[in-house]
Amino acid sequence: MTTGADVRDILELGGGEMDAGPISKKDIINSDKKKSKKSAETLTFKRPEGMHREVYALLYSDKKDAPPLLPSDTTQGYRTVKAKLGCKKVRPWKWMPFTNPARRDGAIFYHWRRMAEEGKDYPFARFNKTVQVPVYSEQEYQMYLPDEGWTKAETDHLFDLCKRFDLRFIVIHDRYDHQQFRKRSVEDLKERYYNICAKLTKIRAPSGTDPKIYVFDAGHERRRKDQLERLYNRTPEQVTEEEYLIQELRKIETRKKEREKKAQDLQKLITAADTTTEMRRAERKATKKKLPQKRETEKPSVPETAGIKFPDFKSAGVTLRSQRMKLPSSVGQKKIKAIEQILTEQGVDLNPMPTEEIVQMFNELRSDLVLVYELKQAHANCEYEQQMLRHRYDALVKAGGASTATGDSLGADGQLGLGPDDIKGEGKDQIIDVVGAPLTPNSRKRRESASSSSSIKKAKKL
Image (cartoon, rainbow, N blue to C red):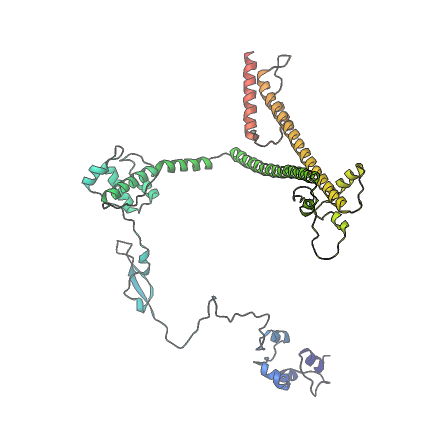
């Protein structure tokens, strides 16, 4: 059975005289009176009778910290502020009539508006924008606006529709009188209207001014719609072929970038090799002329792309000369193993005596070995790509020769040699994805069908 001490311990209340006895409802209700003054100040209200402890704990009773489960926003920022209801009178509203200036039939409508706005214009009347369609006289038409394909009656009918429907040419084309006049397209109607507007603007512009003239290119609009119609009427096979060509174009661009990058790397290696060779020649000439001071002051620095770049130990303090022989961390394990293998084959010690000349010459030797190793790899890659492209070219030549030969040759027994199915199967085995290959799936089908039809015609003639 739960005692009063247990309940007070859970509720974090102080001990009392009835700690030893059982707890009752009165003890729970009157427990707030026995709290300290500090705890009484922090509470804003008492727990009602019958409320569970867990529900009471969720209520906000502390003025210092906000409750974690009841988020609230008291900042006056961009969020909507709660309405402040006061004791003032509410603004009266009235059900009143109004008219829309955009309508000419005098229709009367009703809506709720404030009493203070009674008698004012309709607020949405400012959005009633009309297009100013130019008006021409009989004399202006006879002097500047005649056209062989258009009569004055048809032009007047066009401008009347433009004024009625605010230049909505789709509606104008729908309401156009095609029985009385010639059948016109939307582009024809636009072209005639904007040509007349341009001529009237030039005529009525004051002298010495440059008027703004709107030009409508009817030919471009027709071509645009024709292209959209062709694009919409594509067959699924054409869509598949286009997607295939786009993928091939992306492959071509990717391979082109890879080749350009490889060419740049190869050019860097060649330039580094030439630079290293020139430096060696200059150094030999300097040693022959007996200029040791120049050699000590101006040490040949190997470029970053030429072999290995050894760090310079220019910091203060004592250093070992053997540290200059240590390979930098930028050299990979493959290059290190290749250097060790070449040095072992040539009978060179992997850890020679680190004198000044030996350290310098040993580092230069390993740098040259790395450069030679990189040049060999680049040369091997170039030969591999050349051989691969040669094989692809031979495969394409054989596939093209086989497809043309089937239409021109017959078998020894008077029958056709290879059928379209054989050619198709052979093409799948031989044709490899080549950069810029003109053979798409649909073009292959068309060529195969053409070759098979030509071979059948020749067989019938024979």
